[in-house]
Image (cartoon, rainbow, N blue to C red; front, side, top):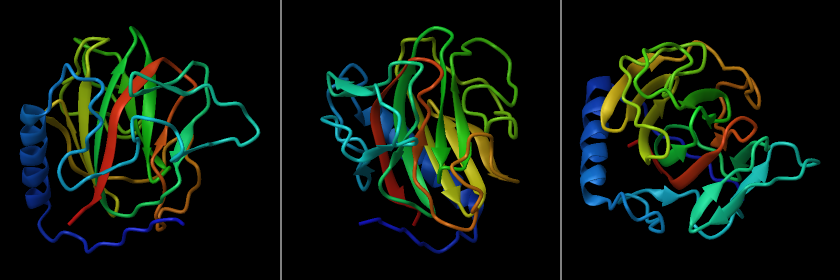
Length: 217
């Protein structure tokens, strides 16, 4: 059964940002970054990846063979691989993601299957609309908050309607910006509908330790 989350829109976007940053900082301080085996989601969140198997994830192309696998409780691709998306669909949400990448690797997280938040090894570089945490080709991050390749990083993402906030490693890099359309590689163009979370697998090597979600309240 598909799960659809319909929630009221915030009237004060600044409260969304403040609450998200506070939650991100609290979770970062409470989590053990050295423990890749702990897939426990933040309080109030539901795990989309359970640390055991990929039952909750479907291949974008059902005719293709997926080479994603779970190792040491971490979800890993074998590039070039296929994209995977969740069985559930979502409307307004907070998304918590912990990931790491190989040197010069890149991937992406598609919100509702339509808006790609870029994952890129760009530590120490400038900012542009294809950088880590950008909305691919549409919104550049305010700053480069990336960590070096091989280190665990954290996204805390809020999507309400078409208004997006992205916190990377505790730093707000997209602050309540409007999404003016889908990005390349989207599952569909039905922007008024709920959609799944999709992870990109056809580019670089990427590891996901936690992928958790809750309705935006």
